[in-house]
Amino acid sequence: MVTVDTNVVVRFLTRDDEDQYRAAKAVFSRYRVFIPDTVLLETEWVLRYAYAFPKKVIGDALIKLLGLSNVQVRNAAMVAEAIAWQSQGLDFADALHLAAGQDHQAFLTFDKDMIKRATGLARCAVRLPAAH
Image (cartoon, rainbow, N blue to C red; front, side, top):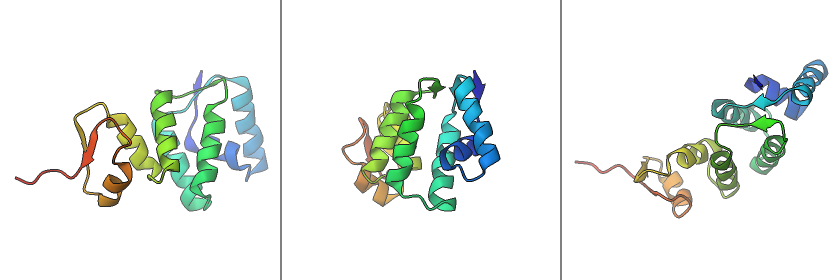
């Protein structure tokens, strides 16, 4: 198994550099590939900000990528949940953070928009920290 960096994933998904795309495709064709959560997070950010891809296109691309039989992530259920929540309006980073922390009592954030969008999605409460 090999672990890939964000630039390998981005080249594979965008095919914007033909030589690097071929090398990335070879990696995904020849190896079992592990993609760290941090690489997924950065990949989404790069595709959204550097490439201006719409959230739906990014979500669909990540679903296809993670659907490859030789691709693994640390917690597939958590990542799938984050992708689903992103499609429901959460920022992908927020969705990934929430999915990772939802087994706890609460997810605390000052981001009122996230609270509004995330309410009812996770098993934990999403709320502001209490001031004392």
